Length: 217
Image (tube, rainbow, N blue to C red; front, side, top):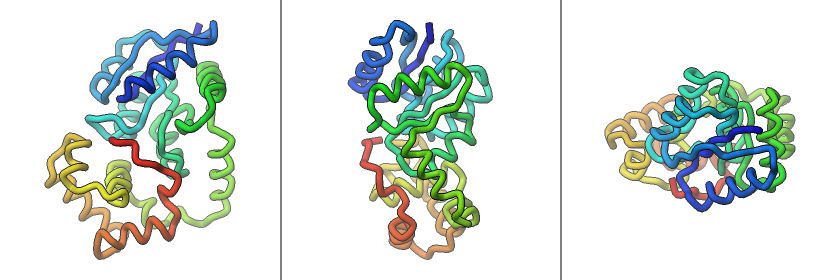
């Protein structure tokens, strides 16, 4: 029996995930969390093999949370389930300790396959994401400006491009507006872009975040 934890701030989505996983006789959902703090506590204490983790929950940057979980519970396999279909997010997630990466638009059967595979010790990435990786292997873009951003800076960059205000970002990340402003300044400096409108143009030119829809977090 594969014991699974679910971490997502949308109750209806967790309910759907639970139903999909427990429709098989080989999986049992043994714990759920709706924010970053409760997810960390659950990961520390629960007797489980796999954590299905949303990267965009209230309280903390998802990649930072993933890193801490991996450091404290390296035996807990983490399947990232997210709205972020952009290849750079997947790369950052695997570097942070993820064992698998799946977008929320994936079919139910793919979720079951992903959990089964990472529970056995393997890694999992969807066919669509694997194709993105392959297409980018020959691209000499490791020194691209957005690759120089930290995980938190990249998250703030994404939110700014999506049109979120400094105050909105601060509320969602549970930090001060001053802190977000500091991140924004660092982003502009690292990317050598003079103003926020330039960030939007950069994202469009480099086809970043184009497959994402607002997830409300």
